[in-house]
Length: 130
Image (cartoon, rainbow, N blue to C red):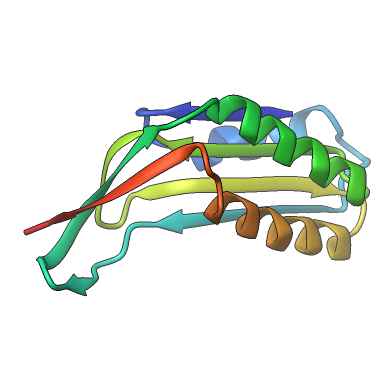
């Protein structure tokens, strides 16, 4: 299980290697979902990025989500990563990744995990406008 809240960019290839390296021969499905910053127009102008900061124990929150995924679905491994600091247009905000012997569990776990990441009470989000 991997959880992270960091200003460092998320490296998809490294996460893929982490999820497939330990369970070679047991993994039937590896699923990675990336949330990225998109351009939005608001009252204050056009979004040029988003800033994320902790307003609680982010790692404990991520750990609890990861454990919940492993309890509900048949998963070999889980990775939940969130960015901190300023994240620009097109950059990865978060990653949820799982491996599983079967694709249904992988898809269901990722979908549930995405909803959990969106609702994390321990992260504050501020849009950055042009």
